Image 1 (tube, rainbow, N blue to C red):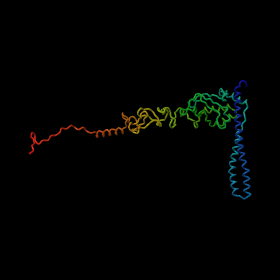
Image 2: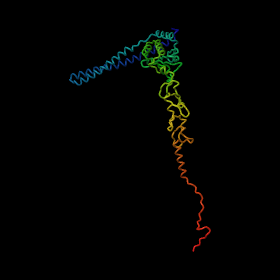
Image 3: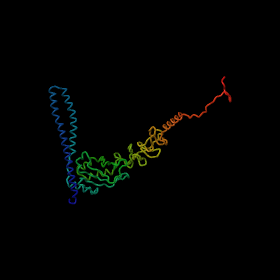
Image 4: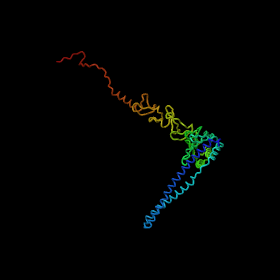
Length: 352
């Protein structure tokens, strides 16, 4: 045993964790037993009420009590079956120390070196490089948290950590088709994994997980292998290949062809949210190629504004105004000489 001193220490920590799990299971059975006892205590109450109704010929009351008992007995039988199943399935026998040490030695023989972190209370192994259908995902660390084993009935006490991550293009949290945010989609391995932990069969526990990582189930991936190297459109979420992916230079995100366009003035690629359709010419433009009319403040593309920043309507209105002002402007009168009227040239008019 001296040779396996660390293995013995880890085995003792595992047995302690399994003891906490057993205590949790016993506490749950205790609670279910109390609930079941409460249900059983209702039977004498019904019996007294029913007997009283019969003895006093309260037939309607007796019928109501009988109907209520029938409903409660249906529930009672269902709860009785659940209680029995819980007692049968929650039986837990702790393994022996020597058996757990032998399991740890077997892991090293079959799966490689074990990593013990006694401060963090974890037992880990590192897989070989995982590759599925030509896509390499790197190696993974399967890390079992001993202090989390007591939560086994409702929470997985282990994580799948990508050491050389090649995440899905559409979701960086998915490092394997069946691993998201370091959590494994166990599928049919759900029950075998929990039984292996509960019984201290760590060799089977690690082996089952390695087999799941080496297998691709096309019916239940977080991201399918066909979409692995694609990019998710920020707007609609559709995964597209690199050739069909468009980068918006305004918001700096990736979009599919349906959710993107380009500025028809400067040819910049933009998403639909960052583009603007000119109400005058209906061309999509980026925000840098749009401006407001200095007169009416309507936003238009720069092609629909003149050098003075005026739109067509404001240009016409200004021209009409200038024409009106020209019509109303007074003309300058030419200088005229005074006229001298005479009866005849060279003669003086003398009155009689």
